[in-house]
Image (cartoon, rainbow, N blue to C red):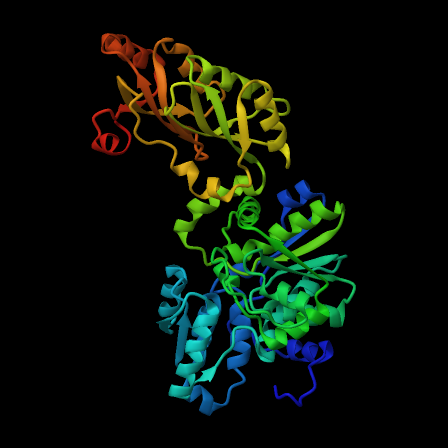
Length: 517
């Protein structure tokens, strides 16, 4: 649009959305109730399943609508785009459908899954920079050099109109009351299309934009009344990692979006789990932003009986990232609390601590993690994870520990602890003489650990303990025990009586290199 062209109104966008060409490649995605999440929140949550599009994202709607309107000459020359992945797949599929060449510039941080998917669709991939903005600048250089048509991922009226067909479908699929639609924001194309349609047709419905707390360019821009360029963006939600939002999308969001919410990584991981519980599908981080925001919105406002729609905007998740998501989901939902606990380095202290955990007020709790390595003759410092049932419990639990003589620091919201320290507890020590190292498989049930402790001889000191609940029926535990040579026969009898599968690792060279003095 030129500077002299008057801005498009919601009525203008409504016409463009109603005539958008998207269904040559896109499908009308389902709008499904999230029954488990709705019951837990006391509000009806509807999931708009854009994760089920042919490229597992909504992005092909806007890309195809833009490209289908290009002239034969433009299509003959080819198109180019910059994208963190989902728009790239939409452009590549649209180019294949329309029989044109597509050059895709992607940040080097793009998940391999998305790079491979673009190439499989016939796109020519060029990797450049760490973010969308870096890739965008390089794409403009290639566009000028090769005479290609640029297909913007968000700052284009035809792209915006294509994305707006999602709102058209939501209002057609759901005839009842709808209080708010929650929409993830990267550059702003999706929320611009959704907001224009809803405010033209059902202006009473709130449009709520959601951003990552470390990638909130739109929210900062609206607050500053001008576009703000972020110095850096978080890359966990790579689909929304945009340093600078579009001119047109900024104008629209500032005028039409009712509210903005930011969510953090842990909340998004919990949202991915919530979607999986209700659908048995795994969305990418950007796809779970809306779910995380709904939960935050309900908690803040205390709503009951309302109806919300969440757009699950993508499912291009690298499988390897699931390890991180599973690790952080429980903390994000505050179903797990983490502590650094100091206990006396005396025989029986570990057992007394475990018994205290079982006596904590509230619902029965499980130990989800326990990391310990002997390091001091008087005090032991352990890293502990416990299940919780509601937000804010960690503070109360820490106070209970302290009241019973176990100094505790609440680490539930400590990023260093969650990201690194939990994996680094251990090391060499001269105190662990006569140590034998064993890997056990424990049945994942209450009392399994206490059985182990009660069968041990009092003079066998635990010098190392590592356990992390992995959500399976059996837990895997690494234990160091100080057993005098004269007790080896009795220790072997103990292992036989215990009956838990085990492997002795005392002779393992890894143990000697990293744990044994």
